[in-house]
Amino acid sequence: MLFPQEQNVSRDGNIKSKQSFPSPISNTPSIKIENRQLKRKRSQNEATSPSIIPFEKRLRSSISQPHTEDTACENTVIDICEKKIDPLEYWTKELRWPNEYFEPEKNMNHLLAKKKSSSSLRSKQSEAGYTPPTSITNTDQKPREVKSAPYTRPSYTTGLATKGSFMNKSDLSITDASKDLCRILLETEQKIPEDSLFRDEIFEKSCRKIQDRNEARVVQDIARLIVPSAETLATYGATHLESLIESVNEGWNSSIPFYGPRPQPDYSVGFRRSAFTDDQLEKLTPFVGEITDTFASYFIATWQIYLPFLTSEVKCGAAALDTADRQNAHSMTIAVRGTVELFRLVKREKELHREILGFSISHDHRTVRIYGHYPVIDEGKTTFFRHPIHTFDFTALDGKEKWTAYKFTKNIYDIWMPIHLKRICSAIDDIPSDLNFEVSQQSEPGESGLSQGLGNHNSLEQTSYDAASLKEADDQSSRIFSRHITPEPLLSHEIEEGVLENLKKRSRNK
Image (cartoon, rainbow, N blue to C red; front, side, top):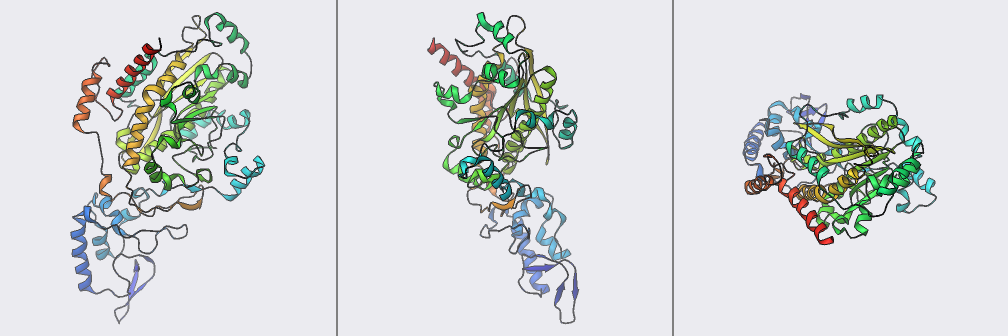
């Protein structure tokens, strides 16, 4: 179905098109005035009842023809009506679509999984010397010096900022709830290993032995004493961590970079497939691909890690810690962006405004830097910032703070992670199951197309926690926080429950 944007009218009344676009009205080259008026009335009636807009039409997008035949204009009626523009009525009057119809932010084209280029896959397979899909995961790893090279220049910080990610606090800072969350994560006690290189009587000797040594030695001796392994803790009985999966020096080859090459964190943690129900995984499929190791996505880091929330980088020397900070900033920008895009998909992104959505830890043989990462969301624009939580020398004062980062990380796993997962699952549940998507076959990093926008689905209206839940959160938060906190989507009472549960577990283990 084609309609003219620029046209010449011949004597017999036919309209000859110079440039064609999809038409919602007619298959014929002639359009009668009375039919146009009837259609206009019908479109006005439909525009006033967005909840009954039909969904029978299913679009199919392609690379060469982003606006194909049978494009359902009703997909954008509600979005455009928010600006008081009815695209059908506009077209019948102006014989062209309103500019808003073509705005890319009106759909989520960019979120569809992008097919990795065949040359990229062949390269990875040849490097591994083995062709099954599982061999692809670890073949893009680079030596430590190589993977760090792009981040050694201070100018990388400027480049990151030009893309909208800043390695500092925003003027608005984080929410009060997130501030109190950081305090709880720092102060809540945790059980520490009984026998390790950080044991009191051998702590100083252990620190001397890794002085002036390379990164690999620091990682070997103390990395897991600074940032404990989620999977190891799960193996030792922390069953609530079974939903987590980690990577060690593994390239985020399934991610879509923000600025520069794909990250390759020394350590990272995210969610495994088993963290989600079958229905949730089905809803995510258009955005991660059927076979995740052959697609790049906003929602996965490696083909096994969904929506990462923690990264750690290890260096040698104070100057090198700045490099680690830049690496972590890039990784966590990608991680936070994925969560924001998921919530934007269901029109709930405002819930995440100034909320900490991930953490990073940079350390060497003596110094630790802990950061929280969060978005600032202003209408359709999202920028990313970093909140400094704590920086310290764990060798000072006879190792007074040697377990600070370890306890903080365990509190992320025990207190913050379950709340974050619940929040993510609620957003996935809000994705309509009756929409028809096509995973893009376009090779990365090009744009892909959604076969149907999400803006018009009546279940995707802005959602929030009900008033009763907010009141309950408010009442309970006052018992743990020193001042009143407006209950954000990150519910205060759930944080409290996590703290209390940890105390109960420790009392049982004594």
